[in-house]
Length: 455
Ligand code: AGP
Image (cartoon, rainbow, N blue to C red; front, side):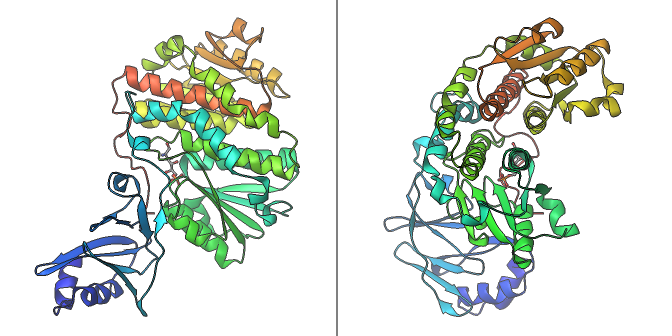
């Protein structure tokens, strides 16, 4: 359809043809066009990512920064409605009002960042980059970078999708529990359509900065005069142009479709927000979070992988902040190993899913110290009584969990905030190793895309 519209609108001037054509289009798109006899490539976008690479007597267009790294570190982010005419010598940008200037920005990612560097998969590499990603993100985000509006908000709404939604659930838990700030977290895809009453601060968490549902939710929040804050990994991505403030993750490029190091970097931002609201009570502890992650990366998970690799269904359960960690573990497992995996708040299993428990249905139970510890032990015993093999994750030195589970995975003894990181990394590794044992196409799971730019 677009090709025909272009043809109808073309009278020798390709830029004008594209301009007329896009006025007839609805929805989101990023287009590149060329015409015989015109040495230029014409790029235009609306709500879909498109970035221009500025080379030495060459120009590039891509939907993402990573393919450009091989050619240039200088980029131009197009605004919605911009039309760029690219030739080896010039880059001209127009909008409906005429020629416009757009800044050239420098990418701080390198080509090395997007190579596998000796790892079997990008996902494995990215899991092992997490100590660095966490450390860099937490050190780069200074307390003074946290917007004032987030220090004493009356109410916080968080919008996100997928893995980023799980990060949002953890933020909600920490804001309410440690800062007494009422909060809620909404799926971007739901928020836009049922338009709940919204006020105060709205935080959009999106690794790519291009997830259509999260962008739409933030636009809806802006329309209600809320202060909007983006948490993203990608400099200049669409979300940065919608939100009033942006907090950047310093995770570096994430190539694998399964989000790992961007999630840990999101947790770094979240923990720094909470720490700042609490006036820096645990900064030292957070600065050393990377060491606990490093310890987890050395673990041998062979016995747990053996339990999981032959399963058709796996449950992941936890309570409090470990409930979203369980959801994230299940999401990782299902998306890369294709084993059906469900995350549940541990107390919910007996409200239905118990019917599915059997000797062939492993349960991965996060059983961390705190007020839910005893009730988690009871939950594990109930699961064992239904015949389910249980992998228990708890603190190193725990003497009760090993007695009641089939496999015990001990994580380093640290503060709750760091336990959220370490337990997450255990589940990422478990998913990765299980999928690898099954020979799955880990970095490109079937039917999935890294950025979901359509609703
Ligand atoms: C998880 O491994 C997926 N990549 C997916 O759930 C992802 O988190 C979701 O699509 C949201 O992406 P975003 O963070 O880029 O908005």
